[in-house]
Image (cartoon, rainbow, N blue to C red):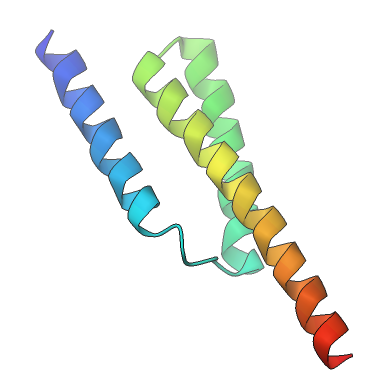
Amino acid sequence: MLTMIVGVLGLLFIAVGWVLALGDVPPLRLTIPYLIGSALLTAYSALNWNLIFLILNGAATILSAINLIRRVRMSKVNVEDHG
């Protein structure tokens, strides 16, 4: 039971950190490896049925995919505005 509490607290603190950083869009050189790594860790967590890390890495995968889309859209807007 203590293990689950510690895991859930860790998950919550990481999620709060992500929420606080949502205004910043990381560069593609960070977003792409993070997306691939978190997707692989999500699969790993699913294969080992580690619920805490499955949720955490699944959320990281979704967040990095959203950041990828945001970065690509920002790049297109900048090209259109300055191109």
